[in-house]
Length: 319
Image (cartoon, rainbow, N blue to C red; front, side, top):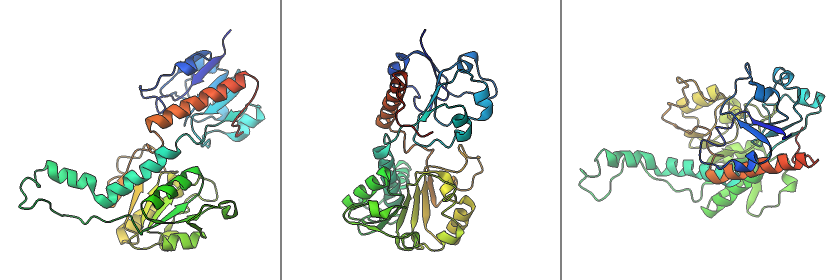
C-alpha cells in the first residue's frame, strides 16, 4: 500500500505552472489549495506525510491526524508549527532552505530601482500621453537618483543578505552589515557594525533576518529615530520585524523617506491598512521568494526530504 502524502496549502507553491509529478510518484498524493483546519477531509486525517507552507500545525490539527509520521515545510521558516506538540508526538519536521536566495535578492533591487528610477510613475505618464504632448525629447517630474556610493545596510547576513551585498557592490554601493556572529563572516569589502551604527549610517536598510522573540518589532520608534531622514527601509523577510504603527508615524513625520515592503505583519492585510495606500511606500504581496526557478527548487527540496524519510533518514531536520 502506498504511503499517503498530503499538501495542505499547495496553491502558493503551484498556482498552476509547475509539474508536480515528482511528488505524485512518491505515493498517494493529495493537494489542496487551502485547507480549513476546522473541517479536515478524510484523506488529510489519514495522511502519513504532511507538506505545509503556512498552514498552522496545532495541537487540535495533530489530534485529527493519528497516522501522521512526518512533516516537511514548503519554506525555510516553520513558526506556523507548534514545536512542543510535534516533539511530544515524535513527529520529525524538515524544511527547505536556500531555494529563494537569488529570487529575494533580485526582488530587493527591483524595488530599489522602481523607487530610485520612478519606473512605474514615468511609465504611467507616458501612457497618459504626457510625453507625446511634451515639447522636449524627455521631461522630468521627479528626480532620478543613483545607487552608486550609497550605503547599503544589511540586517541579517545569511545567504540572502550576502547575495544582496554582492549585488550592492556591483552597483558601486558601500556595504555594511549587522549579524549576531560577525566573527564568522570574512567577506571582503563588507564592514560589520553594531545595530546602532547600521541604523545611523545606512542610506538603505535591507532586512534579512528570521523572526524571533528577540527581534520582533526591532525596527520601532526608538530605532527609526536613529536613521537618516533620507533613508529607505526594504523588508523582504518577515513583517513583524517592523512595528507598523511606528513606521507609519516615521513616514508621516519625515523621520525616514520611505519603505519598500514585500511582507506585512498580517497577510493578507486589511483593505484599510495605511501602509499599502501610503505614497511613501511600495508594497508587494509577499512574492520576493516566489520566482518560478525558486519554486521549482523548493519542489525539488520537498521531494528530496520525503524520499529520504521514506528511505529511513530525516534530512534538513528543524524539529
